[in-house]
Length: 174
Image (cartoon, rainbow, N blue to C red; front, side, top):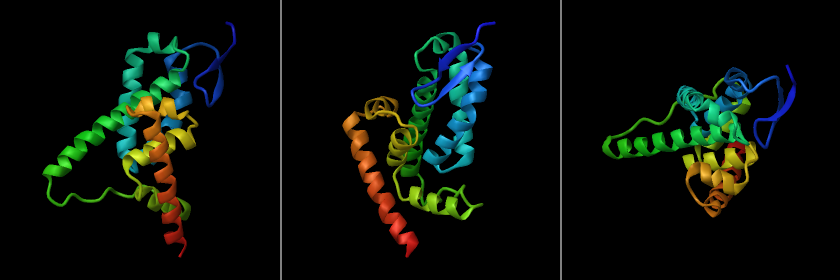
């Protein structure tokens, strides 16, 4: 068996023996879960989206594994699922009376509480833009394609998100 250098995405490299879905899943699952947990603010919701995204990738694995960036496709798929759920939830909230706030998933450690409070001040689109560009290092053009918006919208969302995080941090520190 030949060892080949395989780039799963533009951010992280991994050496893989073959292009198996199982190896891809093992390599990417935890990272995608953390990203979606930060984007959604809810571990159960993040787990659902991760599961749905991997199912969709698995169904198309022969095509996806041949792509230049299978991880990019996975993240775009996950963000599409997130965006669709967000739209449905927003419509549901319009119909609901007095919807309850989301459950805080970062309650176990002080730093996570601070991060959760700060991220909670952002809109879901701001969180998604910041996670994709700042945490994962995707260019604004690619992040825009993942979220279905223009790169200029991603830059604007990221800028306003960073400003909101700074303001939230100042309030938390007081």
